[in-house]
Length: 209
Image (tube, rainbow, N blue to C red; front, top):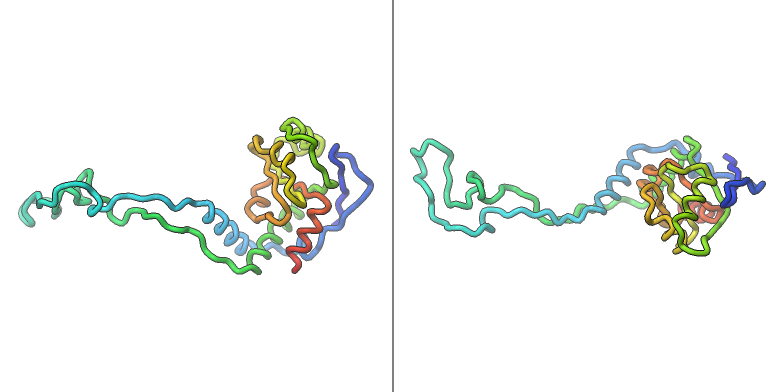
């Protein structure tokens, strides 16, 4: 698939790039996409939720009522889960939600995500650029020039460019990342993926090892 290369003003440069069929032309695998997105979201979880069990509450250990004959459920001390203000049974405890995925699965998932965007014609290729200073206004103008204003935009750069990152940081629907850090969730979450020329080369090198 050939795509015209645009400049920062949204004008055609007269050059074209060919998207690698081994990445952008494959049949997407929905199951590996599910696993990769699930792992990404699991990694974002703090895992710090905690509730007190009956042994962690402060209160007397005196048995409040007789074992039988009271007409209700059995209960021991005032920390019993049966009573209001008592401990919680099987409540959440701090834990690590992350899990392992094989490298080949993660690579296939990223290829699948990019393939979906290629099928939807939601990939824009621009020549390499940078901003002279961090200005949100410049980034908004950039999206207007590319006719992607108002959409969720993922901009993929070949390397970290602080001015571009800072310019997009305050925009809710814009995300800037590097080619080495592209993940399935970010690609699928975006309406349009804007990739620079050198970023395409880096993606080819990483996903075709």
